[in-house]
Length: 372
Ligand code: HEC
Ligand code: HEC
Image 1: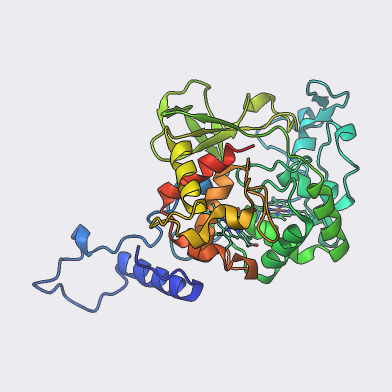
Image 2 (image 1 turned 90 degrees about the horizontal axis):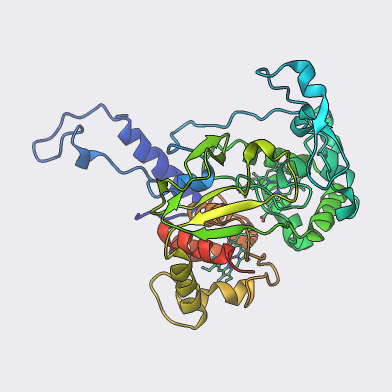
């Protein structure tokens, strides 16, 4: 794609291309030498044609004017289930003496905590949300989980350095960190949270998550097949454990167990099916750059390990990458490429990501996610 990925140019081209695709220019008749507008060659490709939609948990490319539906707050009763049934304390998970009701799993302002002895006490903001948001507050742990492992649709935040964590909140707050896909609803929610959070709450959350391991670690399986998937919001759910679907060029990241039995058990993590050969291809890309070899994709000056540390466990302002959700990693690389992630520390990442194809991002993420 011949696009300057700096945000203003990018947005300009985006609007231009879309206006064209949608037939916005009605002033001219088809010229004899020009392909007719109905001809496929006359259609400009979608400027995000190479977008890894699977990493966003969205089925179609964004269109002009798209926005996200605001997310809910408070206790989210499921209208399809009897109200009183949802209040009954009938849920358990193996090894915990606690009991919760179904509605507790859908309470944005109070995260369930199956194993309180396994972590230092949760700061109020992590368990209940930012006080300034009142009835609309949302607990960090609802999305990022009590152990910081996160879900593929948000972010694994366990073990992030405090300064990096705080810097990201600042980027969300100032509008410098968005999503390439304006429909992804949890990013505007995250931005609202970053705008409301107090400095004390932010630091308490950062210190709490820095001390979490996010365990269990993600399980990576290289395969040419994955289970059939269904989108549930922006999360993929496996509808069977049989690997019946071809997996040519994407990663399929799903809960490592039965969705129905999950109950947000922090002992249950994720599994990622990655394409055959992707781990080795990703390793070669990262190793080539680290060894100083010149490749078109990764010039020597931009090796991942130079900035993120030899084991990719993070170094200075560059956060840890090893073992983190590959869907998250690919999404971030693409967001750097489009300029949706445009914070002051994103500067060194933009040239790196701009040179990577979606396929290379996928291979690199498969490799990095498999690292201890
Ligand atoms: C509604 C779900 C939701 C809630 C609640 C939420 N977040 Fe997030 N958070 C997100 C999403 C989504 C992202 C990443 C978006 C993306 O893919 O770019 C994110 C990213 C982050 C990151 C960046 C991680 C990284 O590696 O760069 C930090 C830090 C963070 N959140 C902190 C918090 C804190 C602190 C709270 C509670 C006060 C909180 N979040 C509550 C959804 C949420
Ligand atoms: C010149 C230094 C530099 C190089 C080279 C570099 N990175 Fe980064 N990377 C950073 C910095 C700094 C950040 C933090 C950006 C921010 O705060 O927005 C970052 C952030 C990231 C993130 C986002 C992590 C998160 O938690 O959201 C990913 C993913 C990433 N880098 C992957 C890579 C990969 C893969 C490579 C090699 C192909 C690479 N980086 C090479 C400096 C670098």
